[in-house]
Amino acid sequence: MQNFLQSSTGEAVSWVWNLAAGGIVTLILLDSRAEELDREMTDLIVVREDLEEEIKQRELQDMGPTRQVQAWLRKVQEIESRAAVFGVSFQQRGASSEGSSLRSSYRLGCEAAECLKQVQRLKTQRGNLLPLLIQAPPPAVVPQPISSASIVDAEKTLSEIRSLLEDNEAPVIGIYGLGGIGKTTLLKAINNEFLQRGSGGFDLVIWVTVSKELDVRKVQEDIAVRLGYSRPGKGQGQTLPEHPTDRVNTLLSALSKRNFLLLLDDLWEKLDLGAVGVPFSSSFRNGSKVFFTTRSEKVCNDMDAQKKVKVPLLNRKSSWTRFCQKMGKGEDQWNDLSIRSLAEAVCQKCGGLPITLITVGRAMAGVTTRDEWQVALMALKSIPAELGDMKKVLILLKFSFDRLKDTPAKECLLYCALYPEDHNILISELIDYWVGEGLLDTGRHPDPIERARNRGHLAIKNLKAACLLEDGRSKEDR
Figure 1 (tube, rainbow, N blue to C red):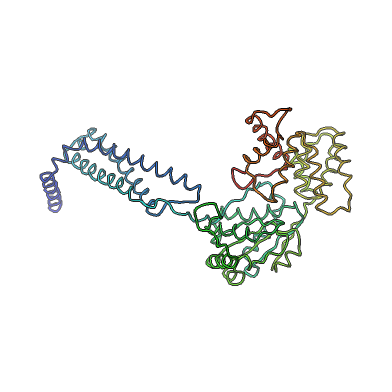
Figure 2: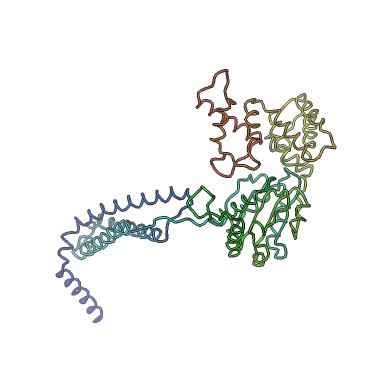
């Protein structure tokens, strides 16, 4: 009891002393400080929002906030919460005898003064935050566009590829099979799985599209971008040296410090990893790996792949399922069995290749009469059995092309062949080229440009619906 009295007396004496030493001023200025705090806090929030908008804009240029800026933003958030708590207490101060007491008002006055001091300090610090932004580190994984439905029939092959990620005895893995069989889709699925589970033991997952015309400089630049370098003439970051030896040594040095997964899509011939700047021997001892896709088992051998995965053709049941999906029709939604029989025959002519099943299936969507199916089957039966695999694929793709009802869309698709293989085409650029070539005009005279551009977007929509065009890697390419 005595201790309690001493404690209470000490607290009272301390409060009275504080009040005598300046507390009266604190009480008098409570209302004006509360108003000033509200104004200053509003100004600080505006400053913060301007900074956040600048950061958002610069993120498009691969720039990010410095640690100083991040710490400043956290402090603003903290003082905003503290000021909000003060505001509630200030508004409720007369709701009870406790809230209207001199002691409560004194404490509120002290809190207002402290919050105001911190808000003003943060406003001053904002002017000293230089630099605001630095080159942002590249993300561990960059997503690749893919349809989840494309993986359903290849789960067994995908599981086999997954297991090789854990195989320390196989640093180089080749995935091979016919063109259009789904090798790229499988590799994209592996890439995107790291988005959900993190980089999975790899510091960096690097995606590079190689294509038929091998360009070592492009491969080097694609790898360099994932390491934080800029392409020549793009961005403000450091670029790779021009001299071939310096380029190789720069990549060797950077990659040797990381545990990476390099995904090379569409190899047509051996790629000398050492000549690119991939530290083939030393890096792989710490778990780094290279996965690549190719149409040729010979390329797998030339690349000294320790493990090879062959992507098989779809079986008859899976082919029929995929074909019906692309037609937008259930497997058992065939009232006329004679038409179903013809449809199954058309499906078999696709040879179990996903790309032909998809394009031919979309081309036959909406076909309901026996005569139309017979005409389609006769057209496909004209394909000689002795043709090579890719020639057969091209003829099946031509079948889908011929069934396009939109003639301008056909011409627009052919125009796309002027671009390099695996090139990501900006939609706005492509449509402007179509307009310039007059491919979207409906009469003798050029149409208004906006009307022509609208038809261009419609043509792209129809070509995508026919599965003859795919989404690109960025929103602008879609």
